[in-house]
Length: 227
Image (cartoon, rainbow, N blue to C red; front, top):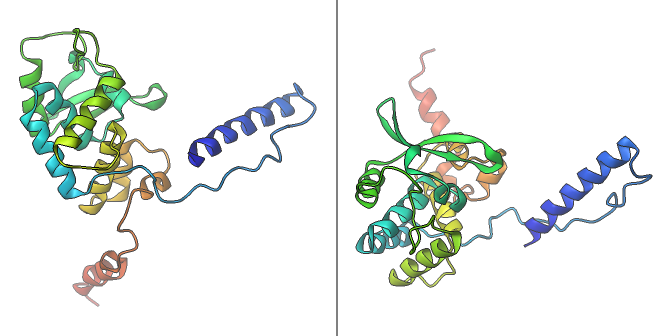
């Protein structure tokens, strides 16, 4: 994808710029390399509200593991590495919330809340286990991303979804659903662990809608103001 090419070229350009500044190379060979133009819209295929609902219905009709994985990905918007890397010891309580501690991109640790629906299914799936990975593979080892990808595709097929869906599509769907539901951009950015709000905005399909224009909110906010 062009975004991947642009990101890797940016890394090379920064590396060679550092080498040039430190005197390791005489000139920066990546200085004039042209980077591909990246589309502002996210090109990942996500599910709309009805498709996501149908997907979760099918997940609920399957095994407890498949259901739990679907809920963690769709209702928390986790990266697949974050979900599969979590252990039972990472499940906790904090200020009245049932939580899950995860390792974000770059090694940063974060605590995310679990919706009651997600907690119930996780409890059912984990059962009497007290340690080890939350999500297990067929042989009792930690589930890998290939097994997770097959699970997501199988559930999508059962739900009658013809799009090419992957675990990342559920993260995409979570972000889009949150924005469509009116969750403030800053809160969605935090939930998605995006360092730049522009990354989160790429998922906002309705940002050009006049129904959401700030003029209506400001007019309503100021209507009751006294002179």
